[in-house]
Amino acid sequence: MHYFVISLSNLLNCGIINERRGDTMNLNNTLSYVKEKGRKLDYYLILNQLSKQSYDEEIIDELLKYQNDDYGFGQGLEPDVQTPSSSVLASNIAIKILNDVASPRKEGIIKGLVNYFISQYIPETRSFNFVPNNVNDFPRAIWWNGDVNSNFGYFNPTPEVVGFLFMNRAYIENFEIESLVDFVSEKIICEISKINKPHSLYSVIKFYENLDSKRQNNLRNLIIDKTKELISTNRDEWKNYAPQPYKLITSKGHPLYFEYKDTINENMEFLLESISDNSVWMPEWNWGQFEELYFSNIQYKWMGFLTFERLKILDVFGYLDKQDDFEIE
Image (cartoon, rainbow, N blue to C red; front, side):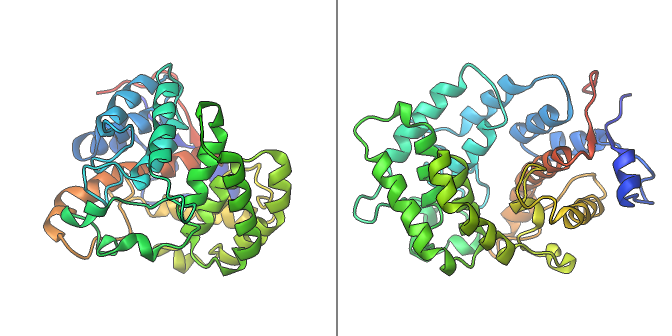
């Protein structure tokens, strides 16, 4: 049997050794548990992350099961919203997944998403709603009850969507993408001081990452300052729904990496220590309603995706050794 291991050299350098598991961590259990309890999509995402072998086509096959005829994504791809209808919320998850794969089919999916997003544009407010009006007709987390779109400010999800459209503007016809990008940029400059929720900052960062260098220069220092303001460096807060450092400093190339290097290492240690007995990460939240469905089904859908995301960030910061010859049982 082949084992995936947490890089021992990094653990020794950072003092990160979990005595309960010994000096290496067997992730075969992770794959077995996700395969049994989670979604096939997340199973293949994790395989793709851990192995040097590509599972891109399997990922695309599974992802397309969540796409609708309008080219948007729904069908519970974002597990907290179970409406089958397409949503900006679920479509943004699809984009995150597409960013990790290379496939000849990827371009067609992106073109479809461009058309879907443009169909959801609200000219009067120059914005996008997160979810469709029928969200309350299906099981969901309690924070998606009621007229939820009015509960989100302009900065979530509009900047993220506009950034995606700008990056893929070659596929756009008859849409004001350049002026919309400038409008969002100016709004960030004028109102970033009002941002106090991490998800709004995540959306602004996604927007920034897809801009040209000239526009980035106008926003860089503002975003760095806001990141310093909102980032959680208190380990006790990480047990809850706090903006952990890895959510904001996503690579060693980030301009704040060296300033927060020790905190990032501590955050990686925290992630390793928070793995469940089944070698996966479970969500730190629950729905607050539809409890039977959540605890029997939904939490395991989140489990697979969270496990993929956290293995990915451990890999980014050098805590995983990929294998050439992993055998699937």
